[in-house]
Image 1: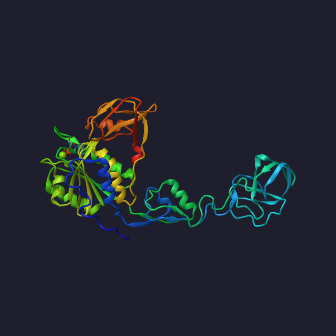
Image 2: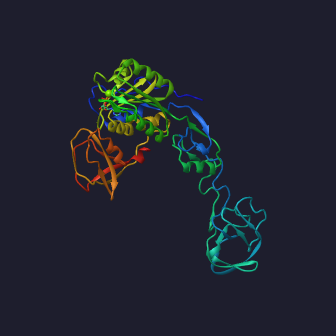
Length: 417
Ligand code: AMP
Ligand code: MG
């Protein structure tokens, strides 16, 4: 298995003097500086969906490999003119499977079924429904073009043509395409392993008894599930308290087990913000103050060569930052190239006055052809994340959105959720 080169220590450096980084600039920086970190392995088309193609793959065989019948009917040679035609039908029939091995004489027809390779002497097929069958002959009306109701060899894709390109996140349809063009094994990237770690003294395990001042860890089950949906191997590194030594040990462990690390909490510059403190001490950390709402501090760094995304603790911000920044960045690490989510313009079903300066993501869903947004923008409102089926993205500048105005809606599905 070949391994790509390590990431550079300064891969998350921001331009000097910049205070608030606009979202697009932050994304452009990630895009420029990250690349594949995973090795290459081989899988069959059955195991291919969800994997990232490592190299361009060419068709080994044309699809279809031979000209064949597109319908059930009768095959013969040549176009037929307008008017009534009668043709004798020869013995036997051409069906999908081994090719009918005798030539069909000119002026004769043969019974042929969908998918059958056209026998010699056949280039045109007439549909069952358009034929009257008699004793040893058929009658039908023209006109019919030469080649009607047949498929040309290679009309879908020809042997040696590139079927799929490197970086493609393979889909179920791709498994069909690979199989159809004769490919039994494809080179794919090893699945990116992404560790997830929650930090904070206040956290207890979901379902555990929580004392006063304690809250349940909501980010870890969310982030692990998101990563799995993105097609990565999510590695659960549990929770650690606000304790620098414990966090250091856990990061070491995570770096040994995964290709990249997502932490949540402790990413700001406060006393208990140990993630950013440790990354800073390690000398390969940048605290990105990104002009985004929700979620501002994003600590980005390398821990033992592994990229660390220090997400905000707030679950709403953690999810939005994961969708907007971590997902495309992890896609690069996974060899999938940069993938922007597909959004669409839709009329707003709400009114909002937005201040200039920060790009905003609102929890939203489509109803009756309009984008509705969650009643509260409170960044602790996890119920809004759950209510939503996507995000409305409002541009960085000032905006007064009135009902019916166009806004950009990005379904969760476009992010791969
Ligand atoms: P922090 O980023 O550590 O300052 O945390 C910001 C807010 O998010 C605080 O209210 C934390 O209690 C909360 N928080 C941090 N981590 C989690 C988590 N894993 N699940 C739920 N809430 C969290
Ligand atoms: Mg905290």
